[in-house]
Length: 266
Image (cartoon, rainbow, N blue to C red; front, side, top):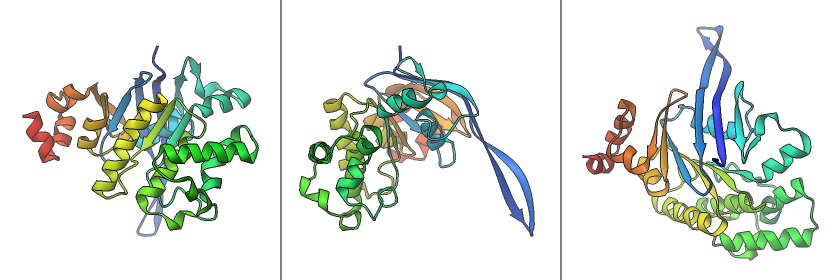
């Protein structure tokens, strides 16, 4: 049985837009009848252009965005039907790494407060236990525990993203949605973060949904790739199959937009 299974997920957002002073109501189908699965221990790369629904889908799996219809099954339990204590237990095992390392950390909190926050919310252990776990997670992401007493503005973008990763690891989750975690970083720093995620997956037996618009990064990290266009999954397959023998025209377009990927495909 897959660790994560999504069945027929749908999400529509109501919108209003102004044109020449008038306002017209409309709706955007951000996720359109999407079904997918992720096996324990694997990385599924989710690729597509901006606005294709990737981030919305990732947040729906964690129930950070409520689905209009469909179901999400995590380890045999229906996440969308869970309530109260059961939902809290499920959320301990499902965490997210955000795209923006500058906007995702509260500037008024020091690093210890930021990294420890999931433990405060979920189990309220004493501060000494929380600090000990926070120091352990900081070392795991390649930072010194002395950083715990400092504030986000004192760190670079790559360091802030490491802090965000440490926060996601605090509850020892089994499943992590990594939502474009390197898109706001320069190439060399982004490569370090990708390699860090790969190492942490081995050390903590993690399962990833890795969301990205970059085919080269996804090819390096993912076991399988799902391609999303206009709210729908248009192709899912092994990394080898998707990058060397894509079946869908949109997938071929994504590969052609990356010269080194297109050369590999040929």
